[in-house]
Length: 185
Image (cartoon, rainbow, N blue to C red; front, side, top):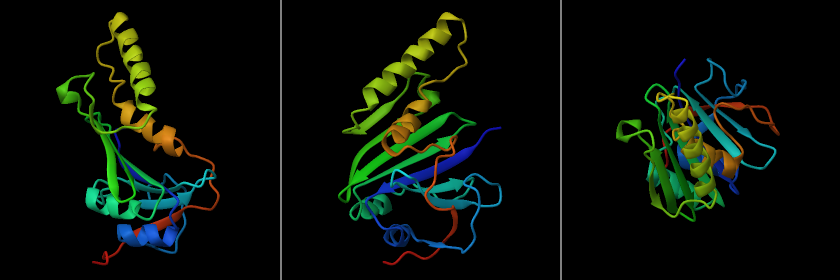
């Protein structure tokens, strides 16, 4: 089943401040991190990263202005968007109120397509190389419908934060359900 997911991970910022910056608030309900019932959930990982996970929810984590503002109060904010039915993926990194990098894979530009803007994290070259090697191995087996570069933006976020939409991590606290609110201007 194809999924549309997005999430952000923030380190070095209070939960209250991050939710305020993103225009979100606690609903008072808790759920498992990946349930059908909860459109937006949040949890703190044992690594200290705070995760906000959007499951098929129209709220996007790609508003660069909002992410930059949130990062002005955080050590690092990373965000990822995944559309499995089109194999499109994109990731962003912010710190100190500035966007550091953006990575995106658009398969309509080719299976090896990866655009990089800014100064990406040091983990990118090894992750890209490993995924291109996997792609070449599939090609040697005459499997041309595999898209391994799709995973690169996702794996960069995992390397930085320890979270991915297809892994349920160890949590410090139970997951909380969030609801969009009006952002303060």
